[in-house]
Length: 136
Image 1 (spheres, helix red, strand yellow):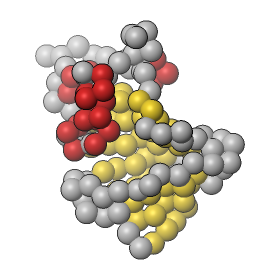
Image 2 (cartoon, one colour):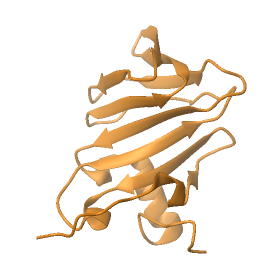
Image 3 (tube, one colour):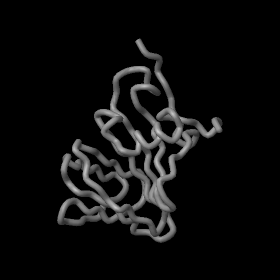
Image 4 (cartoon, one colour):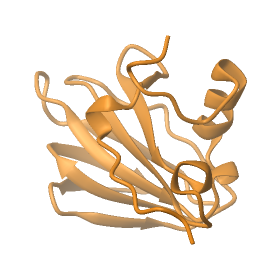
């Protein structure tokens, strides 16, 4: 049986994708020591937007802080703290932070970490999926 764990996102090293977006991988099978979902905390800086993309697999967003315009396929909507978004595989999605100064923060959930492109980028750059701020 795996040990119970507490992971503080503020102690997880962010993976910087560009000037506006950073991702902290806070849970996966390795950090949990057991089969589990993969969870990222993503921060979209004020004034930022993502290019968007399409994944083969389903993804879930849960908004922790802020407001953003979400593009899903051909439609857009506003999401804010407490919004949950189910994004089916094959659907284009992109975010634009509504604030020019405040961060927009989401949790993203994947059934398998390997479905998340950023997970693979972390492993390629760091040699592993998870680092704390105490590591170099």
